[in-house]
Image 1 (cartoon, one colour):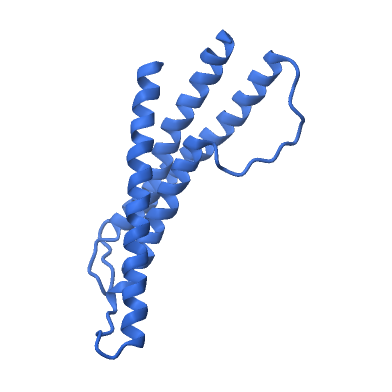
Image 2 (tube, rainbow, N blue to C red):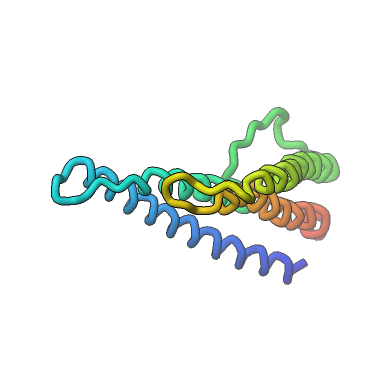
Length: 161
């Protein structure tokens, strides 16, 4: 359990830094795009809009995976905190299994969507669209891994306390 948590923490660290890097690239490309429109000595580049969209796609899905790991996703408390430890564990497992189900749907359907994009190439940047579509199953797989850790913690770590 501890080894799995350490691996997931490392993956989260890498993802957090990747998201930061993607955000930096996105800001730089959009700034270049705006400068190209406003300043006459900078040529207008068509590829910046397309690359910005692709970066934003990866930014959203990798950021969402980090949000699943950090529990910073949107929560709605339907019921107040349960006083019984057993009922709280059951409720937490229900929520975690629901999130894992959604993650599985993203992984499976995202993979099918990515396979549709295998032979598609972007118009301007000439990038294979599979690189863009792969963000969806990547989110699903990462979220599944993070939810497995959460389920294991709910079952084993909370019961020890």
